[in-house]
Image 1: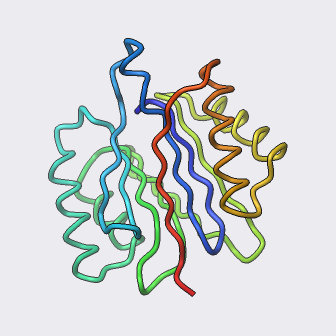
Image 2: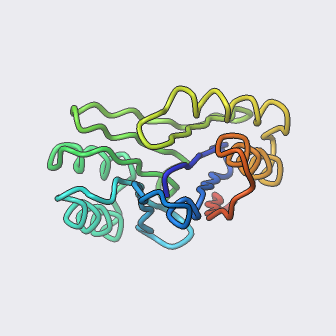
Length: 174
């Protein structure tokens, strides 16, 4: 995948990515790794020398009951890479954490009534974020259907044509 977006609310997190640009001659740049089914994931560049070790460490930490924030901090300390760790665990709310190879870490926890979002295309974050924001404002993001509809429209608007998409939904149990 080269283009993806995340929309997070207090009760769900929606991940949508294109999965056809490789078929159009674009080599995939990112890969999503499931850390815990229906709960947490990690997105990171494919061609990173430490990717297997980072995913293995993150998966083990989640299995051991660590929070996503603890996992993101540990990955950030041990590896110089870009990654996003998101979802939920039994001990914490919906969140996503952006780990950057320069050592910085940003954490996002949507509050009640708040919608947070993130988008990236290869190395372009600002333009992708602007187009996602426009689609979210037009389609809405108060529920899962609206958020995913806006994310799918974002893919089409960014790429310029309708493309197959990969989706993942994490819901916080009541």
